[in-house]
Image 1 (tube, rainbow, N blue to C red):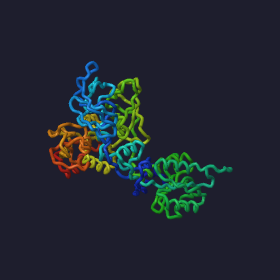
Image 2: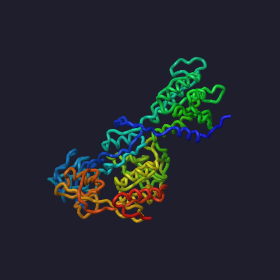
Image 3: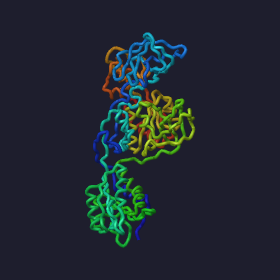
Image 4: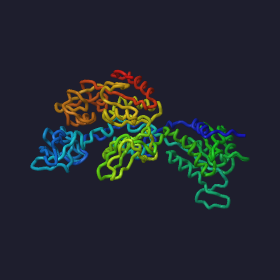
Length: 569
């Protein structure tokens, strides 16, 4: 009597026979949909590539508008216009404004945009009827995706939202895993091809087309080996043909243990080894797993439902293993909202969310940002009658796509190429997925304390930080003029919101000098003299399951990097 094994053991046996396909190919972006990345993909340019206005209006210094109101407008001198697609030829000084189009480059001196509807031009002046805050209606260079930032890890399925991010970052082609080759054989005298005329006792070959569709939907290439008769020699010959072409041969029919076990005899005749024949499941008991000439052969039952179910149980995990896909942790259907969702009055709102540990973190919804959907797991659609959804409320989630899954390591805070490299190394060693959300210091620390994020990366020294990295700040000079920086340092005469903005302004001549972290200046091919140091603290959440292992890895790896000052308990 044959020994029946559990479904778990049968799956383990089949997975032991397959490995990640070592072959890769480079494909154009438009041919990458559904493929699996074989290499990490990093942004080749900043998104957006420059500081830009997010609406038509007037570029101003925000502090010049702080006394503006509908009854007492502020009068500013109009110094010119900034059309889209051109480097600004004007700058904005105290008491000045420049007309600007949506998407146009923010001129030097300006740090906000007043919408057109709150302004009035009159005799060379601009009357401003509403105050704005620094950064309002401006999208800063690199604030969406920064040059050198990880867009997608190897093992990621390329979805439409990944393609959007790749295109925005200037990535025109990607390396992908070669498609697994699955050879499919149907066995049975009663089977005929779909479309042929049925005679008494015959049925259409349903399984070949079902198995093909399932395999193709997973990203495999399929070759149909046709219909073999109930003859071991015919079956053996077709399996041999499949093994020459394919990575895995799937058969359906004639796997049951009976008077004529055709499949087992066929495999034995070509030197195969039967590893499993019979599984304790219903349906799917007569599953057969063999190794033939170093490749796996799996025999599925002939009944369509049984073939479908056993494909999902055994063949699908094998194909995922070949592609290098990680286990997918699907997002829950409900989650607890951690921060309020405030909608625009009278307008329905599409709110994207990152989901972690049953908590839903709302993301900034920026129409011009691709990361709005790239970094999200799910969304909620809030009708126009709802003004506020308070934190702590349970919400029903809609996944962004069929393969949306919860990320393993969620990092929030300031982007650092050095730390990114270390985090990526850790994630790959532990077979984990990684996501980095850019956020300010206070928001990043709060996210870790709430249990939303696993790691916060923030400028400055933080109590209870586990790693404090000190990076050099360098001054790069191209000509005399305005000095810009995104850090607090005495040499800076004006602040911008991102380091990428400082680099852009320096490279385009909008600023004469810029203060940049050395690791970012390296990305832009800039050199300079050292002017100071900036501390970067790494805080790991107590909720992160691999907290101690990550901290040890960070300390060990960063000791080799100049500037690691200390670790704190």
